[in-house]
Image (tube, rainbow, N blue to C red):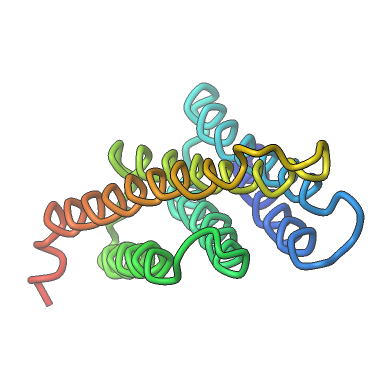
Amino acid sequence: MTFPNRLTLARLLLTALFVMAMELSFSWNQTIALVIFLLAILTDYLDGLLARRWHLITNFGKLMDPIADKILSTSAFILLVAYAAIPAWAVIIVIGREFLITGLRLLAGGKGIILPAEKLGKHKTAWQMATILFFLVLLALPEWIQKPSWWHGLWIYGGNALIAITVILTLYSGFGYLHKNRSLLLSD
């Protein structure tokens, strides 16, 4: 197994640790969850970079990298619903899109076709991660300092802006991906 593929698998382990840190109540759990999430994002950046640089692009990586991303991001989105950070309807849109695209990839794989992630999908992922990081930082901030007076306003207004961008990009990239690969859907 290549090193980039090992990084992809490490992201799955980091996701489990992230969920545990978010769910268990102990000192500095939000900060630890934030650090773990940042490490997981780093593995995402590095696995693709190293696979391209070292010419180690594999079918496993093409398939598992986006799946590991989806598991990380959807886990975080689901957890953030419990903190009233992100409304459930927005998370349903995000997860629904991920299931549809994963289903399309499985359909393509059954026909011997590997559908890699596209540039717009990568932008969508970047905005999703930025939205998650925004809320994780705000959740961890009271562990570092007394909650500032601007915290609530930033949570509401900054959060709503990021959620709107994320949902729009999620829908746009999902419909675009389905449209581009509609021949796979129409051929059955």
